[in-house]
Image (cartoon, rainbow, N blue to C red; front, side, top):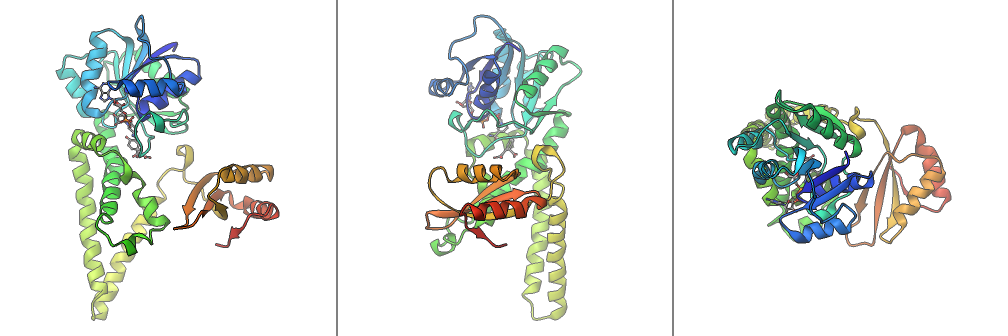
Length: 362
Ligand SMILES: NC(=O)c1ccc[n+]([C@@H]2O[C@H](COP(=O)([O-])OP(=O)(O)OC[C@H]3O[C@@H](n4cnc5c(N)ncnc54)[C@H](O)[C@@H]3O)[C@@H](O)[C@H]2O)c1
Ligand SMILES: O=C(O)C(=O)C[C@]1(C(=O)O)C=C[C@@H](O)C=C1
């Protein structure tokens, strides 16, 4: 691929453009908001100039409701040899494209399974898609050339291609992405009117559960409007489990010992199922989840602390597999959790203590 056109220079479009530009592809940027194009260009994502001739691949990265019309427009104006979109829902936008008179040979629906709760070009990073699944939904009508261009894009972004039927994709993301978004928002919504004395106690658990509740509501109304049935089906199952959980908790509150033990069994079964489901979540790079151990290190909230800790771990020959930061309420300090292979824990702890870091015992 020599040239590309990114339409929609928000989080996803700019991230793809940054990755392509870094690998030598000439990327043209376009957005209905000229300021966003300027910002993306200033980050090094590509050029604001319009392509003088059809590009190899157009990448449509606008909200789902705008995808069919944008793809049809690229095709009508012959802006590219092939066009893909990166929207979070695949079935309905493709049906709408056909209704608009778009053609399915030069179009391929795709979905990178990677993102953030922040929008816009300033949230973009060139490595956003590295090691992540990137779904392709070809049909018998799809040109091989477009499929190959899409595979090249995915390789240039360091992602892993996964081929799926569009409707099967939509049912899958209802389970692993769209329902989790709603549940995160539901938990966070309980805090809106909560007493300040309760909110002050927020720890890492609620931060983990509510990160994606910070996502853009307009974008998610769009996503859920394109996939309402499958999400409602998953959510109905969750509602059933929630009713069971409430019943079990009420039983735990009872004076009757039999009811209490039935309640405990109900809750235990729910938590067991949660443990079992959690073990099925793939780890880094889509592999089976690895079992890492955590080393907790106290850091002050000042520039360069994290870089220093990574450098110290690196010089001890320890690979940090994952990292999280736990901020301490009202203090200019927090704990950084370094996830490492079990065999590396003692080496890392010894090296960090030697260099003056304070560790928290687990
Ligand atoms: N955010 C995520 O985590 C994520 C992950 C994977 C895929 N996606 C999908 O990627 C797409 C983009 O999402 P995002 O998170 O980058 O959103 P974003 O809000 O950061 O960017 C969307 C951009 O599209 C522009 N835009 C809107 N309508 C347009 C139109 N008609 N023509 C031209 N530009 C238009 C907006 O000005 C904005 O800059 C969506 O379809 C979304 O479903 C999002
Ligand atoms: O990590 C996040 O912030 C995301 O919400 C990313 C996420 C997801 O659910 O995994 C959200 C929607 C996209 O369509 C793809 C990815």
